[in-house]
Length: 393
Image (cartoon, rainbow, N blue to C red):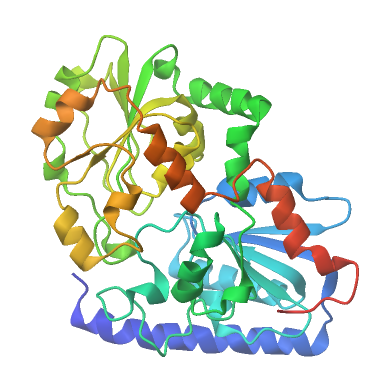
């Protein structure tokens, strides 16, 4: 638990940083013009380009657009070096036409965007599952109404038309700024060639998965925020799960990126259980997965495009619903069986059944813009004004 001094000083320190970001942005804007066709791809989630940012980077015309990448939360960074990196990022942002981010990124909220630029959120999760941003107002971990977070996005992209209103609420922006382009990373599931390359990459990283039936355990985190994130170890008994695996089964554990503590795998289980929490491309693992076991993870959206079975292992569903909450009733998301304890989960590790009617309805609701052309649609929507006078909207 944070000390009282830390709880007192952190807001003051963040306010000071915001003032620095705002000043740097203002001064650079005053002396330097916006560089036409300049693009920033920025993240504080990973140390390499992954997911939506990777698909945008690979597809964008590098001959036409000047693309700069920023990774703002490297583990090796000290507090001072992280602050200096964020200041350099803000200075670059001041002269960049398109700044594209994929998560909560405090430096961008402090600045007053100059005319002629766009700040685009390509949120890292598909669909609309657990409440985020201002949809959590009034709850522990949610923002206060006076917060500056998220509110200055000029554009937000989502995976379906029906959830535009949910992300408008989450980020406190008008719904006309939310575009159902689909998630660029979802294009992977419609591209056989890209899938083969992805499978080769994950098998090279983990040969244990070769010619195996892969069961993926991918839960979300508990806790109010990144610094306090954890997964309840009492929900897992790897010895019992190992005993429940078939001869050709391998269990892959993939913890949420916020959860830093790894599940210790007993030595006797390591021929069938592996932790791939640090593998950078989650969807590569999904391609090999023949059964997903999860709780409230947005992995259910990407995975649904593969038309494969899923089991929802949700021991704390009532508490999670009360404390964090979902955009819709949990039954709308559960296109597979829901179990509340390990005794009920173990017999389902061999399941191959898919509720196709529910899965198809789920995809129509939450993924109607994910059709293999999401990256191209994103570029056409967001970069459409690059030929004329740039404008923020």
